[in-house]
Image 1 (cartoon, helix red, strand yellow):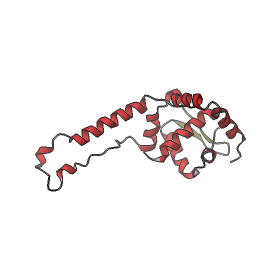
Image 2 (tube, rainbow, N blue to C red; image 1 turned 90 degrees about the vertical axis):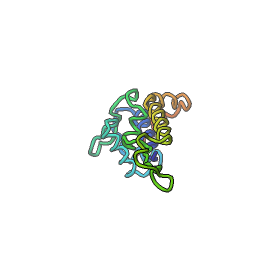
Image 3 (cartoon, rainbow, N blue to C red; image 1 turned 135 degrees about the vertical axis):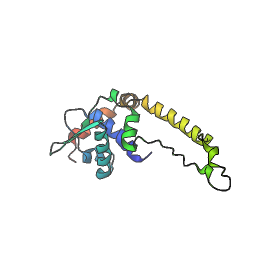
Image 4 (cartoon, rainbow, N blue to C red; image 1 turned 60 degrees about the vertical axis):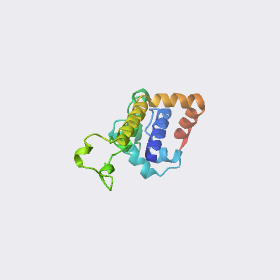
Length: 159
């Protein structure tokens, strides 16, 4: 997974804590974690295309969560950033080199491919079973001061 997934998830959490009162610019979201704004903006645009955040143009524009945290799964964010394609792509290397057999011998996926696809399915199901609200609640339990600190920073920030 690319670092953009981590950035997107943290940005969604920060938007949830910042509240709906105002839109937060990509520059402000990036400044909170000292990230490059232009690259984070690409992740935010991907989230907007997926309907996870909404964007408003103009001087008072920026980003807000478009859905409730309960309605956004971690898989939604991963798919928005990484795309819907499977992470493992079998290229059938078993059909190459000195160990290759006749093409008719390769009708079924190899054991490596089947194992990787089972693991990916489990990974995707786990991410689909966790929402942004779940992560937010865990973060609030383990670091109860974070939501207020985030709200204050975004309210006071001039970035």
